[in-house]
Image 1: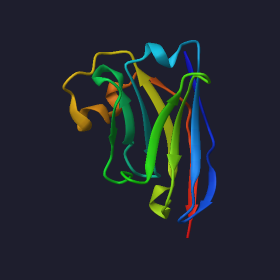
Image 2: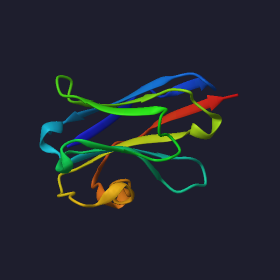
Image 3: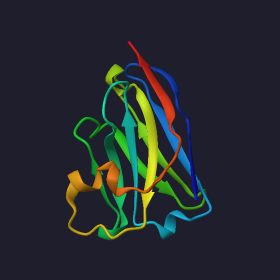
Image 4: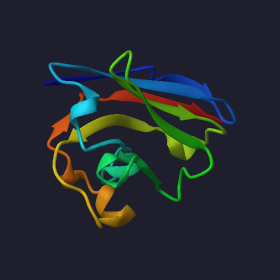
Length: 131
């Protein structure tokens, strides 16, 4: 099982970026949830978006990105994507994707965005947003 993120880079405030997370050794059809996290220097890892297939594909977003970021899965490419718009300097971080095959019923947004729920992680991709 391997997850590889791509699409990071430098963007200006107000701009957009699209991150992808390509899976190998497994199919996104077989996971129960996929999520994106980010970690800024000196800060804890933050869950920002997830799709919970245990709840019919329900999407959860952190308040910090809601309305600006969109998570999706492309089954044909076996990839999970994060469309980011209206970027802010505070969005600067290393972004990670993660998956789990566990059961996630009645967990709620806070639970679904906890890093501990996800046993499989990519290596991360850097996103830097300049003023």
